[in-house]
Length: 342
Image (cartoon, one colour):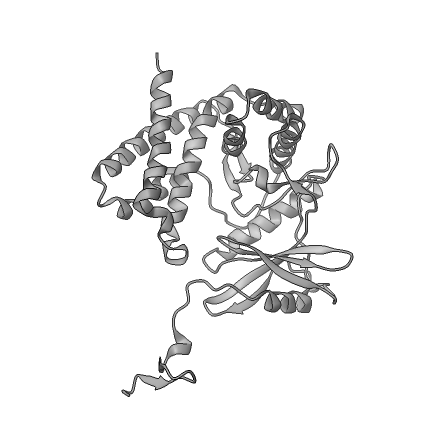
């Protein structure tokens, strides 16, 4: 056996530096998360911890007999300033009586603690668990409540200030960066690449024009879909969760997921959402006009997310059959826009 390998306990040859291989992103064991959280926060035994979601970060559910928490382990690729901005925003919204899971302070008063992972230190924050079922957006009362809740987020965040940097949901984020990320995966599909480049230029021009017409700009939730709204069982106690995609942007961006969810149902649901939003905050005509555009921009930005994370998530959502589905949506939007022109 040469000098670069050694026999493992299972008989297979192991690399001598096997313990030092680079790690892009690890999944921390629930047991380790619970032990770490219990050390720094007021979480006492008996308690259980389970991984409930793996995405850009990992989300864990910690249950105690009388109280439950969500622990989020942020990826090392998320800048510390962005995490601090998110936690500042949640604290601000909760202080304005918006139903959000405000971060729980650690025993030393900090809102996040570091846990050493193979890829580097990862921030962990703790939040109260939002009980109740996820919204389905198939009920007019729920849609109206969702509209009120989003309007309260937008209204309360008008006065929000943070000393921490957070990326904006602007033209770079919505168009330029996704195009840059996806280009390498379209080298063998020149027709789709040409279409995407042309579409990007038209989207940029359309968005720039609407912004100049007065689109509402401010803090956005960034992923305001039914999955991130928990029904507390009453008419006013729904909670909005998961501000991991928040940032300053055009507020109509937050309308797009609800519009997508209600398209296959009926206009009554969409109108109920708009009525609920209008109960709290006026809606500008230009913002309504922009919702269709932001639906496509969300689609494009998600394509960019998958392209940027292939080294961690794999390329399964960017193979040819997946790209066919992505481009069917892009071309369908194009066709619909063409049908609306006089």
